[in-house]
Amino acid sequence: MREMGRRSEAAEHPFKAMAPGEGGGGSAPAISWRRLWGRPTILIARSGQRDIVTSACPVALDLGLRPGMAAAHARALVTELEVRDAEPDADRAWLDRLALHAVGHWTPTASVCDPDGLWLDLTGTTHLFGGEQRFCRRLLRFLQRLGFTASIAVAGTGGAAYALARHGGAPITLLPPGEETQALADLPLAALRLEPEALHAAARFGLERIADLYSMPRAPLARRLGITTVQRLDQARGMAAEPIIPVVPFEAPRVRRRLLEPIGTAEAIIQVIGDLIEDLVIALQQRGLGLRTAHLACLIVDGSEQRIAIGTARATREPLHLKRMLAMRVERIDPGLGIEAMTLAAPRVETLAAQTIEAGLGGDDHRPRDIAPLIDQLTGRIEPDRPFRLSSYESDVPERAVRRVAPLAMPLGWPDWKRPVRMLRRPELLVHVVALMPDHPPHRFTWRGKSYRVIAGDGPERIHGEWWRNENEMWAVRDYFRAEAAGGERFWLFRRGDGVDAETGNLSWFMHGMFG
Image 1: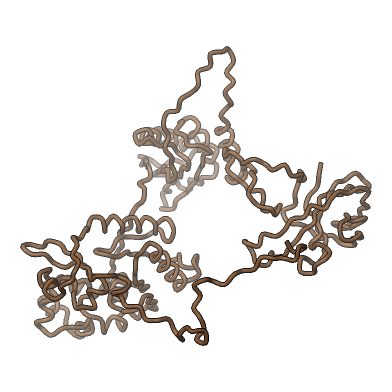
Image 2: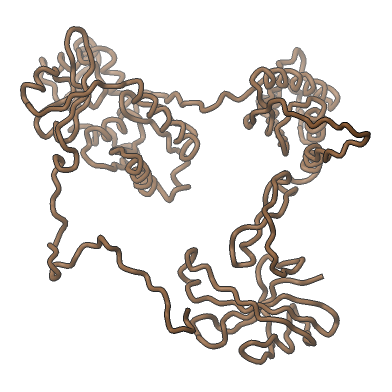
């Protein structure tokens, strides 16, 4: 397209705001909640003999409707009011799904916080997302794509995070450790998750803010507002622990054996491993599962643990095969003073059901052999990630067109392009190159300190950069050549740039692979 004098250009966004001089205002026009939401809407639930408002949309909140108000009172205040029944079970199901998603993508410890929130323990995880601020922004964008609005507070205690998220007034609040007392002082007592009876009693005594409770003695406070109030206050300020009970996405099959006497020999350990595998196979059969990963934990007398793990290329629950694989790792266990308990768990499993096998009517069975046990044996003897298979990947750039896949994965079809048998991990720079520009291979070059004279060559094969991946590859060009040296070596090398436009490359030469 460049040779024809045309090139594609990035068009401006069709909904881009106009400049003030082009008829647009200096700022975006204010949009009311009524225009976005429509009619004021509330959710009601039955409580005793009357209906109570459980939730209200932003329009309804602007009109003075609040959760906890009687539905009849809300209808009297607002005539054009849309009333719907609350669905707490469906809301809880959504929160459970979000908690499970959080466990799989953000943090291993997440829990549902009634009635409309989530607890996330971010200890040791936010650095994976660029810090707490970037993680919170990313979380807000994720919830917005799902259609939810949210406010996030990160604090040293769960009670402080709960209070700041619901009553802080900011979409994102990051509280430094040790400042919970000052941050909670001006918040209302409802931020402490108190019971309605405690809130009514506090109102009778003129207590409105959390700071009003700081100077009160513990005994009179517990007698007037209940012991739960004192507990919530201590938990929010970090003076009492508040454990989070995390959701468990999957109960991994697990078996355990506690030994009467400590053992330390390899034969005894292998015997106990065999008993554990027999028990684990029964548990897997009952649940219709096959093992992909197994972790063996050995509890030593001194309180330390020794751990080994195995992985399988395919889901299996064959006892002999699993015993053989764990027996190969026994030498990595240091029994020390003796092992008093052993636990075998399968954190990664897959569904394993019966399969239909074709009947061989002839004398010879032509079914392909199952190489999964062989892959597992090789994995046990070398590194777990060493056995692999190469597969093609959709990319024009040669070093991106090949990917590692699992040993038993079916590779994709290979293209018909002529590629070398061996490709370098990264192209290596050639020096002292003599070549006739722009469409001829080099006559001689030096690579790894050795000079080569080219007697035959073929090319060029032009490959353009993938501009949709990296803007620096917008005009990048590589011209590949197949060159045969005087000693019989055949190379696959390329020149960076087309030899005409300077923006396509600096005309440097690189070695990328060898034929034969």
